Amino acid sequence: MNKRYGSIMAVAVIAMVLLLSGCSEGGSQGDGAKEAGKSKKERDLEAADKAVYEWIAGTVEGDDDRQSKVLLKKEVKKLKEIDVLEPGNVSFPGAEKKMGEQYLIERYDKYYEDEKLFYRIKYYHPNNDELFTEHLLMEKENGKWKSTDYRGESSEFYRLFPERKNVLKAEEVGGVTVHEMEEEK
Figure 1 (tube, rainbow, N blue to C red):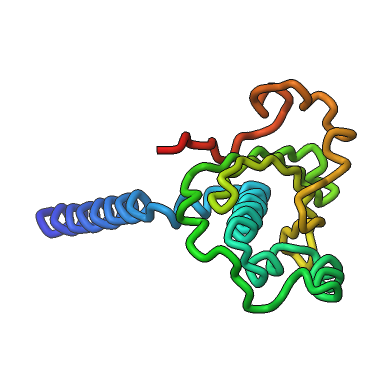
Figure 2: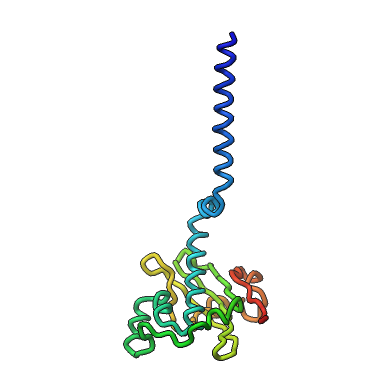
């Protein structure tokens, strides 16, 4: 009886140790577990948001290579033909750092199923000492989100989102504020 009791206790202790170690591993995975818990759509939207930030940063820096990475290939080709984009050109190095957190990104995913996302962005351009408001249409190209326009002028924005006019917050009309603009320090 003592041998059997000892064996049962040993198995119970091993099971408890395995159970506890499994729980602590799951709890300490941090970002990996969070990332795994996100849906495909959430990860896809985050990728689009990052591409929009790259568009802003590339524009503020005047970084032609950075802008080329987030534009549709046909747009890049057209702009290279008229010498607007020059490989290696960075007109305003350090401007992204000067801009800091002074940018706003609003996403409207009403047309996500058609692989289109609309953004309203506002950002401080330190070289001009001005705030700019742009409207981007992002589309999928080879699985990556790309801007359809170099200048950030999607003429379709207010046609497709007439409710956005005279609204203070994107959330009031079904949009999402991805990044809130911070005031100048």
